[in-house]
Amino acid sequence: MKNNSRRKFILNSLSGGIAVGALSTLPNSILALDLKQANPFSQTPLPYGYAALEPMIDAMTMEIHYTKHAAAYTKNLNEAALAEFKGASISLDEALKNISNYSPKMRNNGGGHYNHELFWKTMKAPDSLGLPEGALKTALMKQFNSFENFKAKLSESAMTRFGSGWAWLYLDAKKELKIGSTPNQDNPLMDVSPIKGTPLLGLDVWEHAYYLKYQNRRVEYVNNWFGLINWKVVEENFLKNS
Ligand code: MN3
Image (tube, rainbow, N blue to C red; front, side):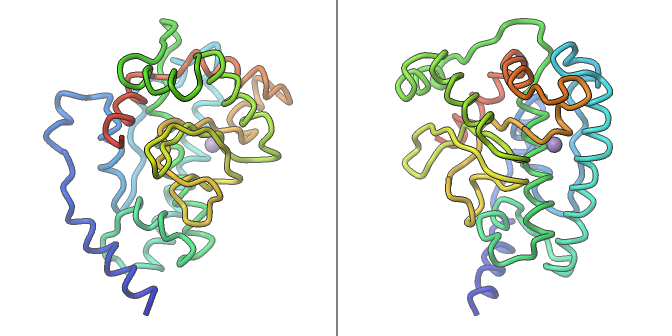
């Protein structure tokens, strides 16, 4: 019964509004992410070329990461969603929030698809330094006192994640900014996660994200990644969810 009622909720929730109209004015928007949150799932085209993040992330790593690793999560998510939902439309956000009801394949690949879609959109070419602005800057300062302290905490979270996983900046249930990490392709949306909330910014610390260029030097990759953050998109994500 519990599963059935949850599934019904997920199916109904899809009819909730999606801000399609806003997309034309916000081409690099996180809102575009929402449009890929219903099945059949597909990868959003990268908002930049494979070489755009050089020298922080090399073109070959980006191409393999996007066309092989992330593509496989999307393909396998569609298989898992078909098995779970028999072709009915679902909201991925709601499925992730109730992921304990579903298969490990749904968890690993639903998380994998969601996390990578967010990851691509929250990076940009390292053409300008880029720092948080506006309401997000205010909230970050309130919670972490300084950008350096925020960076140190997120870096620590990325460095202490043993094996594969993600480090996150997320909004918790009290709409406070928090930092934490999850293993594998889990994320803070999931009911199985010890840290819970809405992911605003995620850092992929699987070796496939950095090994070709950095080998075992995760600390160097993490430090360089801070120069790639697209704070405009993170701020938009923050404003939408806070
Ligand atoms: Mn990855």
